Length: 170
Image (tube, rainbow, N blue to C red; front, side, top):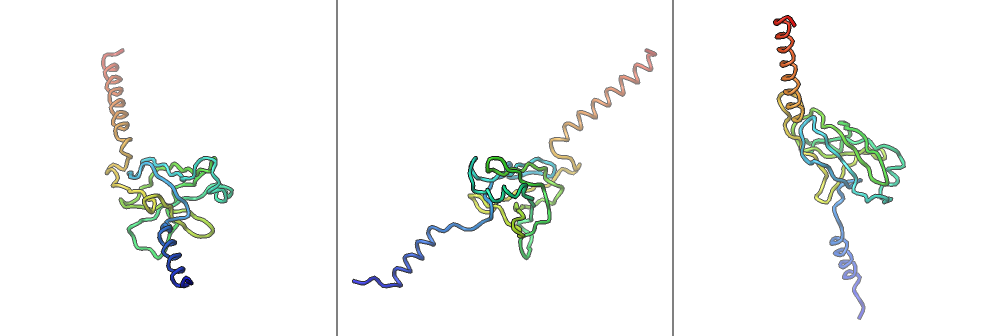
């Protein structure tokens, strides 16, 4: 019995659909932490295992500029306008450590300028993103507030001690 061409084509199509994964970006990576405030430090890394040639072509081009784009704003396409630094490469793994800029609280996608276009980063969960939380009203990173308070307290104590020493004439 001869197999029908449409049956073979249909089975091939079903196989392709089952095996297909969504195309999420030119680069797969991870971000730590995945939520931060303006001023906090964040690390972005590609998922390629050390020694891998997955991103050899990108690494050969040198550092790769990285951008953030609002995931909730409606844009006509991918934008590479809010730069946060550049990936540097070591043993096939790209890494960027950057400080979150003073931007509105929102979810932001990671973007890379590749071959004249702006491409999203992907992850196992979907599009790689950073949840930027509202910043502190003082404008300082959360970790800087205790340090600033300690410095001001030290300055106040030193001023009181100097004034007291002068008053005692010593």
